[in-house]
Image 1 (cartoon, helix red, strand yellow):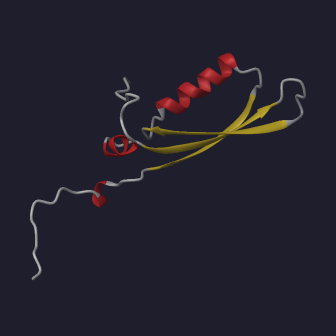
Image 2: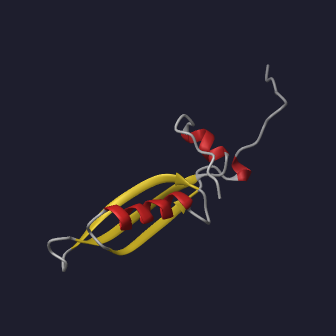
Length: 95
C-alpha cells in the first residue's frame, strides 16, 4: 500500500481523506534494567484498519531502539465521519 501523505497537508485535509488519529502506548524494557518496564506515547494520523504508519514505526523501533518492546496498545478515532461532513449547496435567508 502506497501512502499519499505529504508533510504539507493539514490535519483537516488528512481527515477528509479518511485518516484518523491513532494513539499508541508502547511498553518496553529498559536496556540496562531488563526487568523495568517503561512507556512511550506515540500519535499520528493513520489509516484504519491497516495502520501503515503505526506498523512502520514499530518496525523502526525494533530495528533502531535498544529497548525491546513488551507490548503495544493503541486506539484509532476518526474525527470526521462520513455523515458529519457534507457539501451544502443551498442558502436560507431569514428576514
